[in-house]
Image (tube, rainbow, N blue to C red):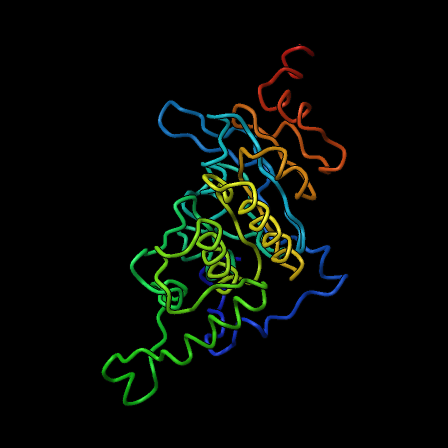
Length: 278
């Protein structure tokens, strides 16, 4: 199934009306990449990388610097096409050639820099690049439907139990944790299948990091697959359902998080186990 064959989400559907999949649906694959490889010139960024996130599941993607995490995440989000292997979204094989393809399939990404405009309000950031235009004559003259945007923003934030001082406050006036929460809520509002997060607790204090982790669990509880790339090993290991570790571009571990300790994760990330077994 090609990504371009997937219909656009219904723009008239408010975020709060998205149904949570039943227990049977939770066994479905939200997003996966199977045995993918990617080479840039003489650099083999990925050689045999696999990851599967089911609906309602949080999968942590760990790896040392240069392990291939960024390239792997870009394949999942449609920025890169794999040289080999297969990407699956919502139980179906797909071919994605852009981030827009991923978004059409219900996959959205929260980037490390959050991609927020600091001088714009919470509402304006929630709809940045996807503004709602009022009906005729507003549509004729490009008038923003601010009432609809405010209602959708309020519903999206309430659904994830995100409390902010105001929807009109500029992003620059929010704390780091609140900014991260807005970025996650925007991604969830746009997605229906999976959310990818790149270092969501980087540069956050302990309390704000815990709030963001609670938010990720609430996202998964809505039946969305969550893939999180992070160096915050103790906190994310305690949060995740499964752990996937990349080493030199290949998946060397895929295991329930409850069966792992931080020292075991670190040892696998730096290749001690594979080298000692050689």
